[in-house]
Length: 278
Image (tube, one colour):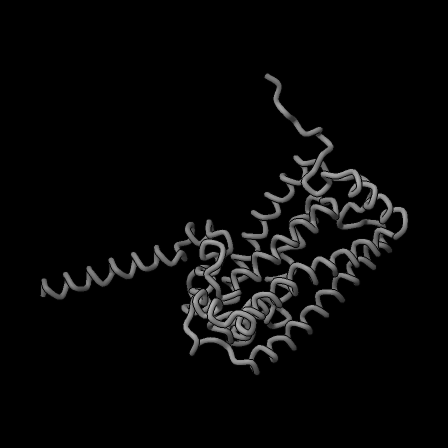
């Protein structure tokens, strides 16, 4: 009995011949710098602004459905004025991100050392999987530790408190942050890992799209996708739990909510026993 195997050159982002031809046409028509800049900007529009708009529209288009699936009660939800203010800061952060990306591309063009591979080739499946898993792991470490450092008493009031204005977050608030946090905790953890591997630009876009979808979803305030937003929602509500995205480092460092609850329960039990002993 024969088994089906994909050819080694096949990739989840290049299943069809039309895609390969279209990509080749783009490579022949535009410079690598223009492709990287415009393509990355489009990924931002589609996978950050798109999901944010959908999640935010649920309150207006499907109010009963929205109320039924909100994690936190109505009195804690941000007002229309707060959301408009959030939009203004997020737009500024997007401009900052785009400007920094343009500057990085400019430097790469001058030095001749590009951060990503922008060519007519299509990355093979094993390379996409390898780069994606590596980037996911490194991003988790960079995000967890930068996020936890931003909760330090000396940094939190000046920087991270901005993001925590929303104790009941909305998707758009994923990038509602101080400019320093936008760079250190939002941009660099996503862009550095694939740059370390000199990943293909298509792999970077795939990874970036996933991360933007993930961050808008965990900030959405809804119980969709098996309660994917629950842990980060608790972080916004209680502050000192769930600093990471995947959860491995929260488990390792004991900042997992369930672990901390167990510790508090054990301490309270010990205190009760000591009280009885006295």
